Image 1 (tube, rainbow, N blue to C red):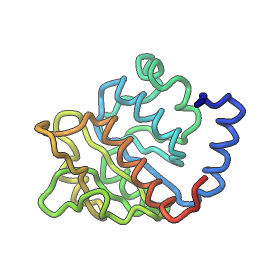
Image 2: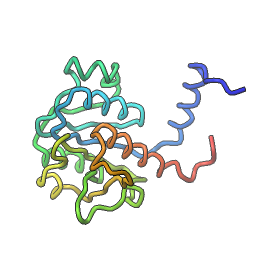
Image 3: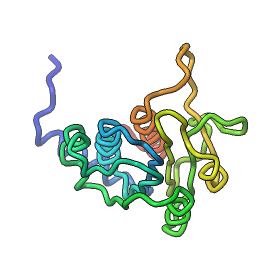
Length: 179
């Protein structure tokens, strides 16, 4: 009979995955204003072991009370930086040793699963309405997109961030023995 893991078993399982994780993940969040989206992004970032988050443009900070309702305290588990212009966030991420890849639909974007994410990478998501700004796209090292087969134009920004973070970790863990 299948049963859910007890909290100590979950901690042990997560510890095993952490030991098999060495790549650093960063995230730039540009002009995402919805507090629930911010809270969800921070929660996913903490779950996938993001090292740093740079807020850019007019992004809502995780200190917003509504963001906190969704983040459930996970904003304390990720180093984050107050909002700066997008190009400054890209520069800071690059100076910290990350390759900066925007998640956006552009003509030259690679499908996410074909982008090389198994290294120190800083992923970028943009505003709910307009995506990443042209200045940010020009400053990034590359662009990738999340393939979709449905009739919807795009994912919610928090969902897109979670998918991209999961794919980065999947690529890193791809050749590990089953745990």
